[in-house]
Length: 117
Image (cartoon, rainbow, N blue to C red; front, side, top):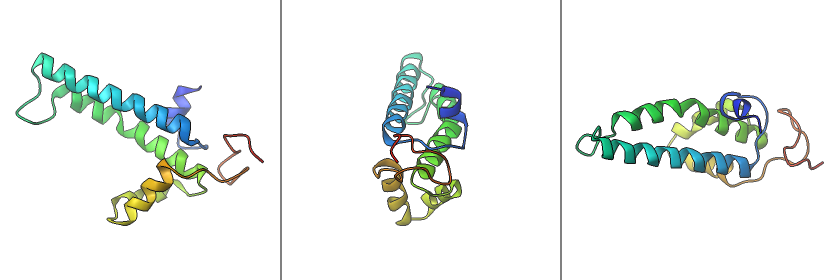
């Protein structure tokens, strides 16, 4: 797998399995960063520590890139991601990104990542 494309590019389509696997890896990295903050003592009283903050900032773009590719797989444009900031509507966008299958066959954003026609 091309990790540069997966984590940095905004074009193309991504099906649910690599999306969830990458998201899971990002969660594990965040947990490890929080544990390191606790061990080193850089976390304040209930706040995020320095390592967790650096990891969170570093994961902003990859998180956006993953979500945009999932939206592309559903046939939606990347700017649709902005609806995550609209209360109530954000629930539907999360369902689309996380749980619904992409469009069958090719769409405007590329070929079906599952190879279906």
